[in-house]
Amino acid sequence: MAFDGITTYKVIEELRQKIEGGKIDKIYQPEKDEIVLSIRRPGQVYRLLLSAHTDSARFYLTENKPETPLEPPMFCMLFRKHFGGGKLARLSQVGFDRILQIDVEVYNELGDLCHKKIILEIMGRHSNLILVDERGRIIDAARHVGQDMSHFRMVLPGLFYEAPSHNQRANPLDMESLEIFEEAWKDCHAPVVKGMYQVFNGISPFAASEICFRAEIPERSAFHDLSGEEKNRLYLAFREVFRQMREEAAHPAIFMDGDRMREYSMTESRLMAGVEQKTYDAPSELLDAYYVREDTKNRLRQKAQDLHKVVTTHLDRARRKYDLQQKQMRDTEGREKYQRAGDLITANIYRVQTGDRKLIAEDFYQDPPVSVEITLKENLTPAQNAQKYYARYNKLKRTEEALTGQLLQTEEEIQYLESLLAAMDMADCEKDLEDIRLELYETGYVRKNRQKRKNLAASKPITLETSEGLTVMVGKNNIQNDQLTFRTASPFDLWFHVKDIPGSHTILFCADKEYGKDYTDQSILEAARIAAGHSRAASGSRVPVDYAQRRYVKKPSGSKPGFVIYTHQKTLYVDPAGS
Image (tube, rainbow, N blue to C red; front, side, top):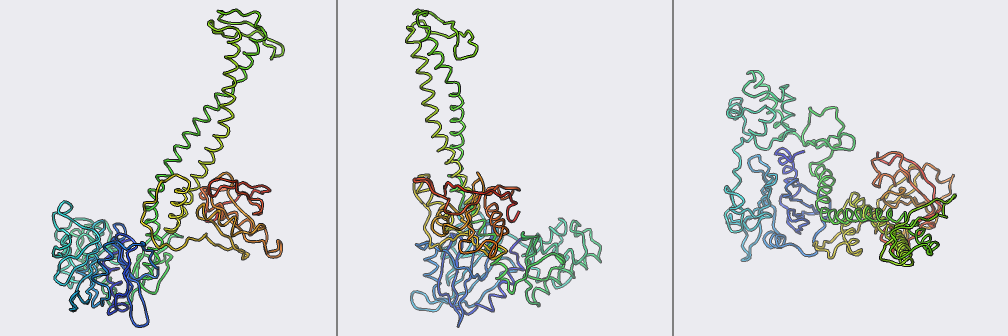
């Protein structure tokens, strides 16, 4: 799904109606490549998101309040200095390219009214947000581009701003005749669907497929191989798409494949006729819904990379330690033979002389007794040989006792670290990651939180409802799990957790309900499925889920966050919710 020239056109059309002439009230910088402008108009405040993110550069009006750093970055402070209080005089699209230009009327330091520009260039990994003063010089940019990065155009403070010249593509709005249309294709030999976005500015693969579908032209056909009639059909379909874009109201829709978003469009799509779709009233509403889900997920994945690396490194180390401890434990299994050897030497000490290399004796531990051979050290006395075997036995016994506790600790550590990975998978906001980072710091896995702190809204457990109307809450990390289980839930609510698998604590709030009247086994089954769906077994089937009244769930003193022991449990085998 591409933020193409058509999307750019329709969003700017919406922005002109809603915020052109408005005043820049506040400026936020949630991310290093993202700015949110609070635009005030009489009786209304809008938030304009400008993102130069390499994977999802975009702009639209958003309903979401940005989570901002406690200390604004330098770029944000410079933005405020030059554009705070300014009036959005004009918003425009440059050459049907994915470039938004905002002309701002603002008073300079001398009190004179001047015109400055905010320019958002959407160009994939070269996307940028650039501030330009009244003389046309660059004030600053989200990304500085020096000569070592580009030989074509530098983007540095103090230089005159130059529009991108990376392509010589035609403006699709200039195709006023078939002759002009054919001329634009003269140097293109790619298949029509691919050539469409190589020849013209602002056309995405989806828009190209839409045009070919309307023209009934095979996408893999070369333009120069088309007949005159086919070229004419392609041109008419091309003109029709852009006529509808300019003359008709937007038809924002996301085309769905179950829960997965397949594509979105700002205009009517005949190609996707019959496909399930979700419609919106305005382009910004669609984009806000799409990017809140997709971009948040991508950004959280990026932000969690360092946490994921810390946890997986410690988890690999713990697993290797566990394997070594198990091997050492196996080595202690035959320790009784050393005790027997010592006993047999002691029982036959009168028969052993210093310097003997072996002892043949009747092993009275076996029934009937059998002759066994015991190796002796010839430089030791009989008593010393016996003590040597006893010492070996005692050492292995002490090793087993120590390893029993160590194996339990290592196993708990592995479970804990796996629970952190599960919590990262469930994180749906930056505060969730911040809680995990704090937990890693408090448990000693990281030394210091080097991330810039932000004004983050408090993260809350997931809240759902059963078909019988009972509330179910799910912790998204170990801090929430402890809070939910031991502070939020009452002793007679039901507590759920997948059996022997990392997952979330899940509470079915039923303490004030009467079983059989207010709820039945259906709610219990649904809560179990929710617990399974929020665990590392979410993609499995027939997942065992333990449940018990919360009063039977205890937290051992000194245990890690999220770790509990429980009794009086019952077990259900369920398919995870959502599987």
